[in-house]
Image (cartoon, rainbow, N blue to C red):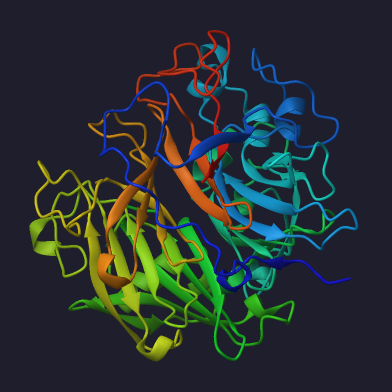
Length: 520
């Protein structure tokens, strides 16, 4: 039987949908969402939907640990889709993987009274089986690969630092994002575990032990097609709070991983494995490097592979002369042979005038950019990549130095997630962290080539308080999967008084993070 593999551009053929049709320009957030003409929006999964076969019906008044451990979580970011081996019934199937970074007490529990035992089950990772039936994608109740990975999940630790910090740990904490790999695994990027370690300290899971902290903020690799596989934290990729990760391979088959640091002044990292991706331990040895901006280019500065460097990656990067980006986030890698790298930066209001540069030219800016890096001749191992700014985000009417291609019918701010579809269009998800703004967060599409290069259109606008947690694609069904995160989560909102109750809009139902499909 053929093994499953990650969906790549070559899998999707030439039948991809045309560029999204014109949509209204940005508009103030609403209680409901807005879908561009030419698309139908469907609901695929929501907070509280069953993932495991023994999942109880959703009842958040209050939520129990049993519910939290068996249902779709409160918050999520799309890590990717993988096609499992074809079954004899010929029903199209996908395995969807999500990272869940947070579960704020004020938004999850009645009265805002925290329940750390429950909260720890709401975060982590979720693997869900999907099947295509009745002309749409639906979840499979108790699917074969469906599982939850959270604070109580046993994980292995491998690579150069494992001997010093330990070879096992209980829990995956606060993953901010993830990606599928060309070798059909998933990489999940843990963020800063400090808050989770404090929150879970008295749950009886051992998180009050100070020797446990170094076992978090790593990259965790999972085989999503094997429900019995043990997640493995790969220490060769360094320890730091990440916001996003993207994986590809060199022309000779070695994994290359790009990672962004989750910080206002964040670094960009690259890891090149020493061996072929078919080697099950390829991510346990290689060269970790950090980007340094020189004019509009980035130079890759190699870091050490010793335990002090890997455990204290950020200090080593600073010493080496790493450059800071304005809240770097989503990363996407073109599969057309150019290996062009796209990076979303959300903006950095703390950057001063005397610390601006060619790739972060605005001081005190909270709008962000889409940056483009081009390796020479597509060589991902090159020491220098050319760089430029594709989009300087923000409202062109009010934000200084915005940059959009003429003909764009939309503008956005705070880009956070990126993914490329089969035609090379870049789908941009925005995240204003629940702030009330003059535009809603949403999914925006950027053309990456031809006469409309860098042209922006809007495909979807989320309800008030929501952010976008990524996009993924199935071309055969012409479905774009999107993740609508924490609707109603404005700064003053609570479980009892959310800013909206989307998607049900029912008075007794809380707002629910929702996996949507845009079909068209």
